[in-house]
Length: 236
Image 1 (cartoon, rainbow, N blue to C red):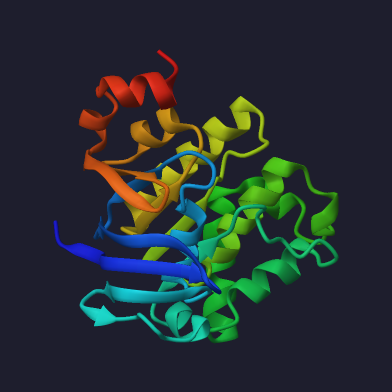
Image 2: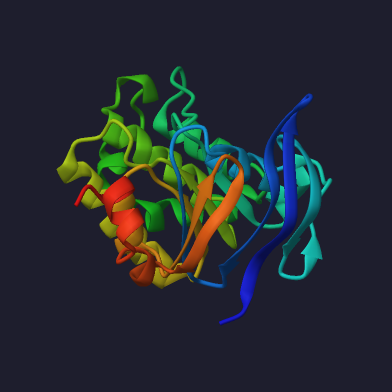
């Protein structure tokens, strides 16, 4: 399987504060890669670096095209969609309006044709189509954030803590749907997830990030068996 995204020697900084120190990683075409690490390790910064939201150095290539240094809107147009930590839902707008914003780069007739497809994945959102997003439950808001990203028809989907603050049954439902999306659309997924057991079960490949450096990488199944990972992140 070929790589959709490749990062080589990626550095990232906020002003004078360096967060990533020359990391290498990849996301395979149609595959799921998990990025693990403690709070403050640089996971969210990695996603922001891919989107052009922080100052970076090094190589970032999407399907062989360099995206390092591009404006965020140009990276989005190349097929990168980001579901940020905290979901980024526009609370004052309706579900319908949030979905239209997600499809802003595409002709209106194409975007509306995808709405029914999204409702097949997330039927609750069809029931709440005219409802203000701020009145949705946390799980429904996360579903809406994922739908908004998918309406871009991305090649690469960046997910930042999709399970955060949600009940276990809702988390199971969301990840079941994400598996369907991966299989149906062939989209590559880079997943940042504090629930390491969940992430390693979902992903094929994984990287462990500590203080801005990759300290372990390989098949997710192998990393889940590592004694240090089990003690520090899996709790057994």
